[in-house]
View (tube, rainbow, N blue to C red):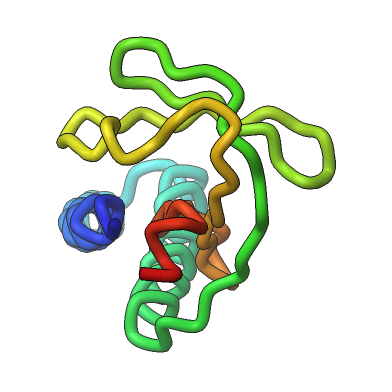
Length: 130
């Protein structure tokens, strides 16, 4: 169940639009010769946005995910509470369906992107063996 890849693609699009907006503002500040602090601020924000969007694009293209095993503890409305193998709780919203695939006590695998550490997919262990 790969519900989160479309969210990551949308995040990349928003980051690219944000980068374009900040570049226009940076050029505006450069040509109007306002305070140099704004140029430094927008330059830093552009660099951070470029790094984050490149990490997400690399993660989506490689499809090399970090897998963590957990167990479903609670299912409430569209939210699944998963206890990871390290003991921490992870709350996952499944608003686009797929909540009926999980049951209490079911072991699941959480697939995280390597560089950006976004949650990419959740697979029930029983679902994966079929």
